[in-house]
Length: 435
Ligand SMILES: Nc1ncnc2c1ncn2[C@@H]1O[C@H](COP(=O)(O)OP(=O)(O)OP(=O)(O)O)[C@@H](O)[C@H]1O
Image (cartoon, rainbow, N blue to C red; front, top):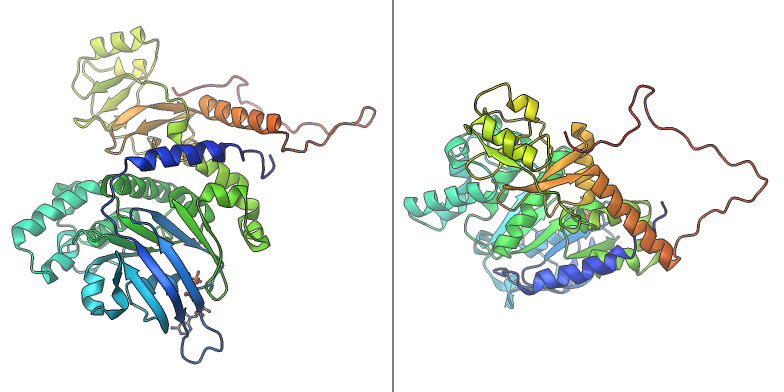
């Protein structure tokens, strides 16, 4: 596959993105940088030479670019953790370069790598930090804490009183997001927030952020080293080169289709194919319906229902419809009732996940499919590797019709290169779906 093979999907995605955007919730505020310069003392060149940038209210904008190009400096100038040397910054039309910096920072959420939680404070105390400064009463803080823990997918009854050290990196990062949202700020700044977690957890946290954004409509600025992450999360991506120079600022589809400069072309370069796969969402592929069963249901009726649907496996869900396991009929038949078991290796992706995440999840769990969940984690169906392949094949066919891919033609009489067989000797040749 060449970098251009999936280009036509970008048109579809742009159209879908704009139709999804029209009815979106917006509680965020716009951000405008006007001739912003940062010169660090003792440095011959400015870290950010002169930056003009407009971020629309309710957008996620991802800053990417090589190390040292000024991403973090720019981000931190927005909440004035770093003071600009020159220029103005406006949030919701207010010139924040004139505001009290402490008060400003209380009104902007800030998330850093690894969550940045206070290690000796419970989750509840961490989340309540800014509301306490704002003198909210205890009841309001408790209610807000529970709402936010639920929003980021952590059960308040289990996690509210834990210390950060007793949680995984991904869970700490979720608390970091909850804490940043505590005082309901219109703007959230995130500096490499998912840099320290494994790829599967990272994909889940990204999905969660997209779901939260769909629900809350904040303005989010995220610094990342990862162009794939930028294309997944960003309504727009800002590509910077040394000195905070803007190489391109556009929706990801546009950057992939029309890189503005040779720098962008090179920067996007080999990641482009992957990025195209990243731009196709699970919701763009046909999702197969699944049979679900609640814990405690009589096995006999569950098995009959599953057989009637022509399936030999089903999904056991909790009271919220969230998947816990996906046993086969044979496994269910060993007990009179559907038993409760949380399968720690259950492959699950969100509708907003990318095909790349779905393939990752299938590979990581060695399954031929993944379960798909909605914004609240309830199962809505399954995606099989066959349907992903079909989608990719369709995209390739579109590209061929567009005649944008140059295939190397085999000339009669020259020896063709043998196709390598990538499979173990004992691997069956037939294609299997989920169990
Ligand atoms: N406190 C400082 N004093 C002097 N120079 C600094 C300071 N902080 C950053 N710089 C310089 O400013 C430039 C921009 O740094 P910045 O951290 O904003 O880049 P970045 O794009 O976020 O990099 P990375 O991706 O490596 O985090 C770099 O050349 C860096 O060395």
